[in-house]
Length: 162
Image (tube, one colour):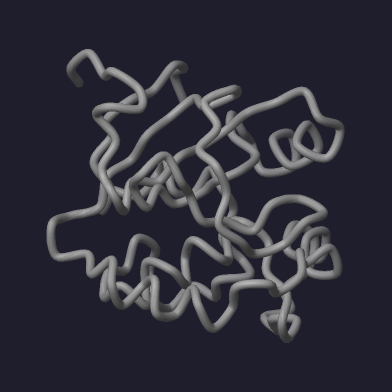
């Protein structure tokens, strides 16, 4: 990995992974084996798309506070297709209902019109014709830390060791 200048070296499609001291994030990190609790997709112009805790799916101003990793999809990732899908789910709620069962149960049902961050990113990449995570793994079973473990994404920046 080279020295990364933020936000100048970010590219549309990059996965942004975060850690924080927020109580919900702390639980997510510890239940999933951390060191990250949240993931967003960079779309350029200092903006990202995500499903943020308590807010839901939307387009947000880039935040660098708590950013601990940047992962890059291959050039074959189709940002236009991913953003077309985003327009369909934009405004969907945050999926509190599936958040805890995701960690503790085997159910594979996705709550309609609600997504948590890693399910959102799994589907965003899939809609962009890129499987960051195995297509056999349901999106609502993917944790933020799983993105750090997949060989499908290039590690551009990490501020920790797994």
